Amino acid sequence: MGFISKIIGNNIDKLRRVKNITLQNLSDDLGMSYQNLCKIINGNQFPKEETLETICTYFNISPSQLMTCDLIPIDLDNDINYKILFTTLKDMERKKLQSISKIINILIDELKK
Image: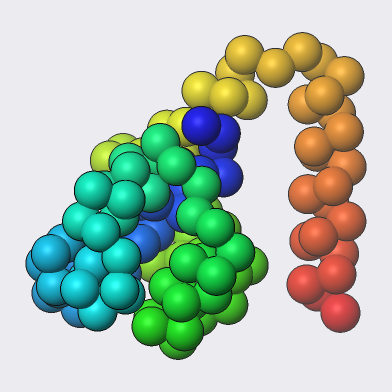
């Protein structure tokens, strides 16, 4: 699956660990199978819209927060989101990197407002 699926899965796993919830308890609480939850957490399955809403409601976050790389303070040396991001960026062609840089600058400018 894609980059966003891996971020979502990693964030669900981080939230689960912060709240000290087992995978089995989380799957029970969300009303989904343990196998499907594991596929989502491993980034092998993108959650359906209703599943995404259920997960966000459970953790009291928005879908956009669930899809962000820095949802929870991280250790840059060990965080999978940043490893994926840097690996992806490293392999991109220059024109795409320039476009991403422009988007980041726009976001930074918006945050300063």
